Image (cartoon, rainbow, N blue to C red; front, side, top):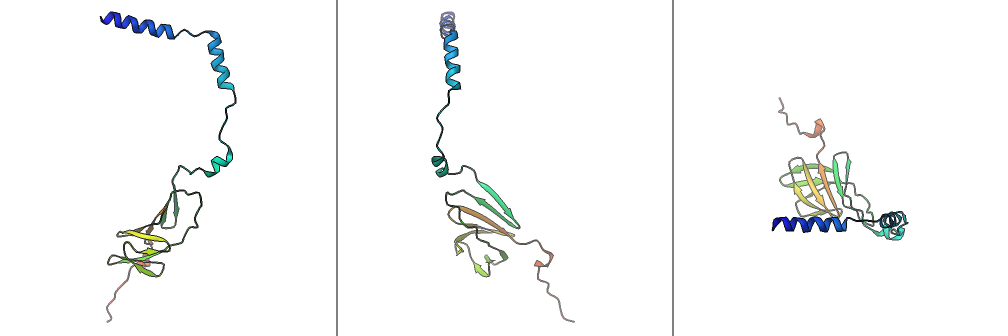
Length: 138
């Protein structure tokens, strides 16, 4: 039984493998024909499939492309104290907004902000003078 099945499979493969020179030439001609592509107006309105990572100073921005490119807002993280972040001269907590961005998380050295299609990570600066020094008067 196994030999019969194997023989049938082998014969069917050989039967379909028979290509004439005309069939091969026809396939080659189809490959060489100019194909219709996508017009430029359709390409202009398609979304970009890639996510870009932009790094500036101490800010990492994940940009999810949109057809209308938005103006990038400058945000600066100055301090993190008691679950609040001091960003652009105002103290905000998680789930509060600043300049169209909502504060999503606060970490030890940075925060995560998000608006509709941008995620920003702001970090504290790594300057030596960021620390408050308390000295005793003598």
